[in-house]
Length: 396
Image (cartoon, rainbow, N blue to C red):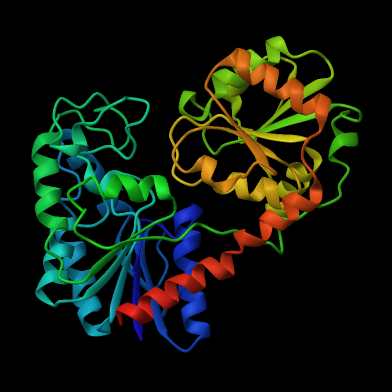
């Protein structure tokens, strides 16, 4: 079976998923090629096809920003890419993120429809059925159900100076419907339910949760507590690649004002700008050197708190549980789906309730390491990626 994987990039969570699925496919005797835009000038190998480069990507971003049309440029680079795709002759095209303005989306779907290629599309967010945005929870917007317009998030990613969401919603509906054989995959039940209410509702939808490397994320000893003078403290951990209101940085700031010296908040993934607004009693760690170090930090914490307000299926929840640390999260997207009553708790976005729940967890210690380890067995990335190969075979 020839499998073609397409994503914006080959790094980060979505890039990692793409690469791992392709690696597993090759290990089982299939041909698998990964496609993404070239951020650096480097020759492609037999397992890679580039879709344009940094220059074409930047041009497309500017075009999108000033016109409001996302996914409508990169014509030459997409033509060159599709010429190589035709030569490869895929049995399955596996789509991931298409929204970072690196490929001509109508050209891609016209090619798929014309050549009657079977498609599996993993949705990592909501962009595929909105006029522009990747999430709409914070904005409280339901226009995607019937047709976007007057976008309340016009300057949010993917940013635009012109509100073209009404036209883009209509265009995307035209592009994305009518594929003869396409299966939608979502990592969460939450997103699956949304798809079934959108113009993609006629496609079969399958839930395949994201997974993690249980060889890395496991209870790991370290000197983290001693290094940061945290012995005897109840550590509340937060982690994000970008700290903002969407990720709940304001909640941690307020908690730091309320909790007494029995508790210590540690935030990972911060930067110099974040440090300017964080209280002195929050430990700020800008980055970790590798996943092993991250596992050490998870393992040192007593509670992982994920106050995310927009989310699909956060990997950090799984990583924490696998390292033996229970999770507290808002009822946001698929975040609550990762925990059960033995491995975490769901709280409302209310600072009084959050404070009381943390104190209750500190005083009662309701979670057991054995339960966390048992739950972690369901997070194996290898098992999740194998589900994709079974899906490909069923559609091949």
